[in-house]
Image (tube, rainbow, N blue to C red; front, side):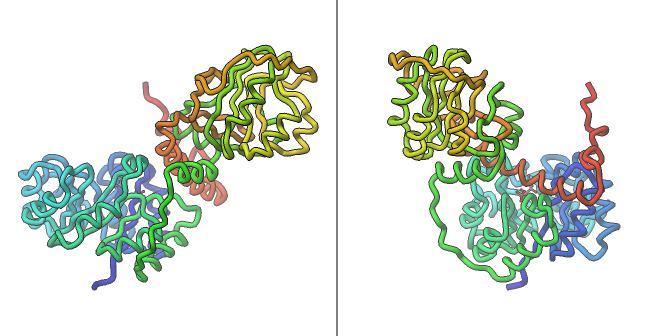
Length: 429
Ligand SMILES: O=C(CO)[C@H](O)[C@H](O)COP(=O)(O)O
């Protein structure tokens, strides 16, 4: 079998950064250089021309995701220097046929993208019959965030398609190796190379992995375990960024400085510092849960203190968030237990048993339901609706990865404004 191709997908908006990152990826072993769809939408065919000029010895792929006017768009990309043009596999057959005719005329190849294709196996056969040169088993970024896997799609195509198969969608060194073992001829990697602080190193790891394909036993991981693992790896700011700036509680701060707490909410509504329900909730919660307590907006009397904290810590509870006051602050700080509150006072309420456990509550400006995910650190507390938790956790990890590359470019001397071309992308209306 010919050596599998490593295609680096430049899914960036800024052409200068894309060229810089492509240069590093090539040094790490990338064979083909893809002008990603975002780059083409941002810079047009200049992106393809520039990559062609800068990398004369490498195949340039234009990820146009052609949906219509196949001939014109293929001609445009071919004349700009692309050797392979990507077209949507679910485009109409006439568009595919026109694109193939144009490709033959200009001496370029067509890669058909299976993103969103309902029946990928039979459509791949049709596409091969229409003359496309590659089929791309591609699961889009938004689909990946919902847990869809490009490897699963690739495995469905194994042995079914008469043309070389590419694969794309969230791949890293480990899954790239599995992709080759599953029959991929072209491995397309974007984020896990271009967002790395060390692009060349990231590309090299993928290169080495695909040159030594292996099938790993797939460790099954529950969705809850994956959500917790991802949330523990990102920050509260990453999470609220992933939710378009939503979900952040206001006015709440970490009592113990640099601590982190991640878990599902057990909610408590109490009144006037009554500490009975908050303490009873310790027995309701399980290891890894967080107590989220509303004290009816009162900050002059505390429903939580040192003894409750001892008990919660013993129970394996991950942390406590209170829309209200806490007392025994020095002892709690000694324990370094994650407690987030809006005030501290020395006086507590009485254990009358007023309030409820595990009802929907308002806490520091956010609605919190039992089972919602809470991510809390020194920047503050973010609430993630339980039904969106996996998607938000995946997106928060993408935010974190993007920042790693930006941090590296700042370290190399660029300003944040230069990197993100702020002036170019400020809202025009
Ligand atoms: O075509 C794309 C998105 O539409 C990407 O180029 C492709 O998914 C590879 O990027 P990543 O490895 O980040 O998923």
